[in-house]
Length: 445
Length: 186
Image 1 (cartoon, helix red, strand yellow):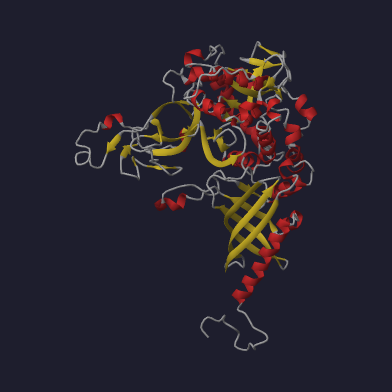
Image 2: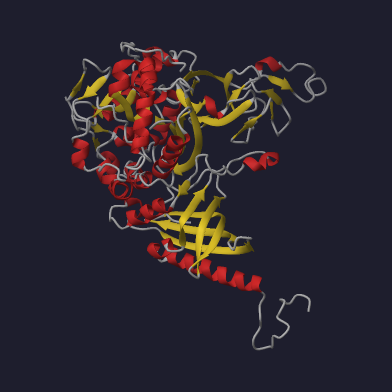
């Protein structure tokens, strides 16, 4: 157990942030308890285990977790650890199984976590082993529009409260269609990066014209995509908003035009426009007129480690993160649309992604600068746009005046402090839901 | 003679004849060696010339599944892949490097492609299915380094007398890639 510490890592008046939080092992160990042991964590998607008895292997922080669908179709998030000695009971990435057997001594668990069979209950254990107390450790599970979240905290609020008004925006990507979404993936790789840097980067649209200029430029040339210069970013109609712990950006443009997602080209734009118009009445029925016509979710992160759509930044020590990249597709979209989005997503944001390739060395050097004697004493500067964010008549949360801002990042580290300084969930503030969720869509989908 | 390569009946000691299959093997092995040098010497435009216009460059994911479910180990085309490039995307990857702003490869990686274990099977349509194994070493910046192992399954086609790669499937042996990114070509 770590001793209770009080963290004050960001100065809201100056945006200076103590960079030791990106490399210190004791801070990291505290994060695993106070953030990853408490928060609702994105762990999978219902479409990855569609049938009864399907399972998908995932992680909550560094803890391996089996996400299962039992024979009755109910979801369970089970710590992948035999209660006898601690061996994993599942070694596959996914599959279909009613039982999981520990390969050490043969203890056998049902896929709802119940310990069903122990060799030698009479002969070796004298009928004194209480199997009912030795099921796999189970987390709380709730879903949002097919995305599965889990938490170890019995005192955590509902997922609905945890997402709060952020869902008002998230719906515009994840909750548009009656048929819901399907997930493909993940691809998995290790980056020598602290997990927080890749999360805070999701609201950093300032880096795009510099970090990603080579990819943006060739995609303008080869695919006819819009330019991504500094001028384009500064003049963008997009917005930047922090809501109840979550960092979001969105396109605000009542021009009845789809957002330029990865993979779209000049050639396929008409196809997306057609799909956008054909589905607009359904989206309007589900989300109401304002959201259907004016709000399209962009880069974002769901606290603590859900990034850019349905992707996971899984901590692996202070200096390493395992990145999981999925793509989410609207199930009922035409195959050509799905194919363009899938190829665009994997070609731009995966391990070999044209955009993503250029992120990692920036992030790793930010992480590395948090280690050495002098550089770790020099704070990061997150001062952009201090004092230029507030409430907005149409939009929930703290809305920045301009798209290019570090307001979300400052709030992300404030949220981090709130978790790290709390004794229990009772100390962690949750903003009340005030947004008007027009339309028929619910948290269930 | 046992253990000796089959020779043309008319071969003499100074001019050993080889079967057409062996000739194909030698020709393709030199093709792959030439490709490896193009990559390691960063002659990427020359490397692009080795691909047919309708190429599909495909790198599926590799999953942990039970032995009896081995058919699910390599993800199929249509699932999320590491790479699924047509010629246009391959050209973009190369063109990107010349912008002077492809930071992940500037300064560039130092690579060594070792290609071997070639098995070549002619197909009925004149194309050749060629399977090779590779070990690729990558060193980047100061201390980053990575060894990538896997196989390539190529479909080769003769176009105007030269072999072109019409389809390449790169199957990595890694589940979680240990490298920070995959910014080099395999």
